[in-house]
Amino acid sequence: MIHWQFQPYAVPFRFPLHTAHGRWTVREGAIATLWDDSGRRGQGEIAPVPWFGSETLGEAIAFLQTLPPQLTPQNIAAIPDRYPATQFALESAWLALQTQPPEIALKPEQIAQLLPTGAAALTAPIPPTTRTVKWKIGVAPVQEELTVFQQLSDQLPLGVQIRLDANGGLTPD
Image 1 (cartoon, rainbow, N blue to C red):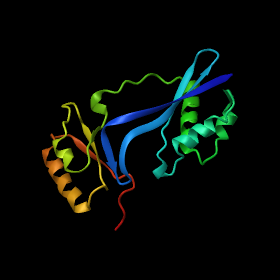
Image 2: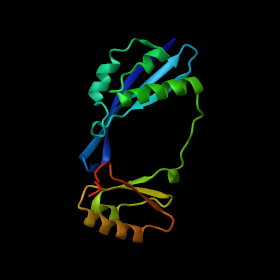
Image 3: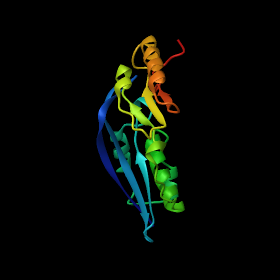
Image 4: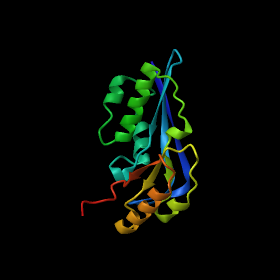
């Protein structure tokens, strides 16, 4: 028998995140936990981003409240496509429960350092172990961002890569 529960969360960003869709100050979601009678556990994260086409957190929670107290693979497979974040979380939790993947500890240098948008990226502290920085673009005019990008490229330590994330904020024009 597979039991389950979910726990919503709301975590404020240390610095508001500016994207092409506006200012984002709090990351909201829920952790879904599945467990069986032998004590095995699996978790998945419901982290909807509605402006990318997923459900809202409220819609996800309302749907979760319709599920039975024990889940089967059929319950999970029957989650409607209009709940992609919920599907992902429960499928991930189910897979983790079945396979019991090993714990993976990421080293700080394996995590991309998120930079603030715009020129603020030029003065953001970057830990010495950083190998990749992530910079949100598609927020300011393209020429302004290109200028900041060039300055950022010139000042980053040798070997540090820049990952650009437009979040759908760029167009072919």
